[in-house]
Structure formats: structure tokens, C-alpha cells
Length: 315
Image 1 (cartoon, rainbow, N blue to C red):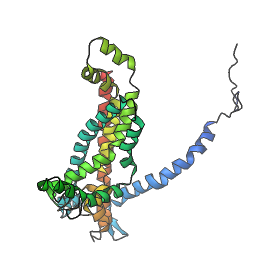
Image 2: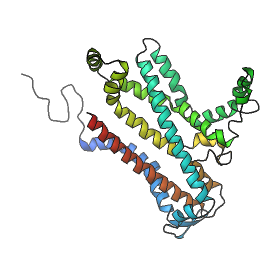
Image 3: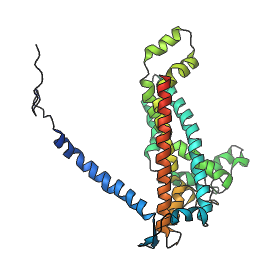
């Protein structure tokens, strides 16, 4: 008859069973770092939003005055709604493209016999490169004067498609969306690949025996089982789209050129805080950051709750 493991601090094989107090000391450094570099700046920015500022000197309590300024005074009442619409457009396009293309690539690689790791690495590489580097590289490639993209179009006889991609407000935002999707497509490919690997093979075999074709098996068996991965990709994609800064900055500068067509909320925050020359720039930019945080946090929690309830109903 096997003996129960000892209840003291030492385990049977000589290991040490940590008490709760000892475990706390192990996580304490991470908690301190998170508190100092994340929570403290967050609460300070929140408090800054309710005061009037004169440069870096805090003035009198301003209440919600900074929030009102964002929607009643130029250029804020024009820039903020326009930038917000671009963030929503980036998220919508990213949601469609990354979920469909990413899932399609992951499904194709899942059924691939050879070279799966190579292609997974290939699709993931842009995701691992700095967004600033990606943005400047695409700026050079899409240059209307010496960019290889337009040069290639001219060589193959498609001169009419050799456009000033980043110089035309009608095309600049779509270029931004495509570059964002191209860079981040590796994340859903990896996540969906892992989710597809966790789908029990016997369920698909049972559906196949019942006469279901590949399309029916995918929508009736596979897709419901990988819905948690879809939720994760969608929520993280929403957060990334609303916080986008590096790529829009690299492609269109701090003003969201041309003519504000690539402007996003993070760029508005940057301009108000560091380039506007407004003596109360600290307070107004903090108000914008506070609203952005509340919107992202609230929408993420709401979307996660709705999608999880749908997952539970499916099961």
C-alpha cells in the first residue's frame, strides 16, 4: 500500500513544497515591476486628465474640462472622430482579413505533410520584426519615384496601376491596412495552427463516416472547436488596432499624411502631447488616453463575454 506524501515542507523526492508566503516572494518582483511601470503611470495619466496644465506645471483642478475640449475645440473635434474612424476601419478590415486568411493558411499548413515548420516560420518572421522597421521598408518599396513596386508594374505593362500609394488619401489608408495585416498574419496562423492540432481526429472521422464532406466537417466540427482561438485573435486584434502607433507613424508621420488619411488616435495623442504647442497639452492628451483606455477595456471585456457565451452555447 502506497504511503501518502509527507505533509511537511519536503516532498518524497527531496524537493521543497513552498508555502504561500514563500510563493509570494517569488512573484513579488514581477508585481513590483508591473506596478511601477504599468499601474502607476496609468493612474497618474488618469489624474492628469482632470487638471489644467501650464507646460509641465500642474494648475488648478479642471474637472471634465479637458474631455469637453476634445469634442468642442479645433483641431481636436475634427482630428479625434476622424482618427477614431480610421482605428475602427483598421480593426474591421484586420478582423476580416486576419481571421479568414490566417485561418485558411493555418488550415492548409495543418494538412501539409512536409515543410510545415518552414512555412510557419516564414509567415511569422514579419510579426517578429519591429513595426517601425516594417513601416520604413514599405515606405521605400512603395515610393512613387524609386520604389520597386511601381517599377515592377511598369516593366510588366501595368503603368496605370503605378500609383503614389502613400501620397494619395484614397489609397494610403488601405496600404496601411494591408501592411498591418501582412505583418501580423503570423500570429493567427500560429494560434489557429495550435487550435487545429487540438481538434480530436476521431470527431472528424466520425463525421466523415456519416457522409460529411470536407466543407461540412470544417463548419460543423472544426470551427466550433477552435472558437476560443477566434475569440483570442479577435480581441487582441481589436486592442492592437486601437493602439496602433508605430506603423501609422512610419508610413504617414505624426500628422497621418497625406491629409490625415492615415491618422489614428495614438498619433493624435502624440501630437497633442508633444507637438501642438498647447500649454494644456498634457491635460488634453491625458484625457484622450483615458477615454481610449476606457473604450478598449470596456469593449474587450464585453466582446470576450459575448463570444464566450456563444462558445458555451455551441457546446
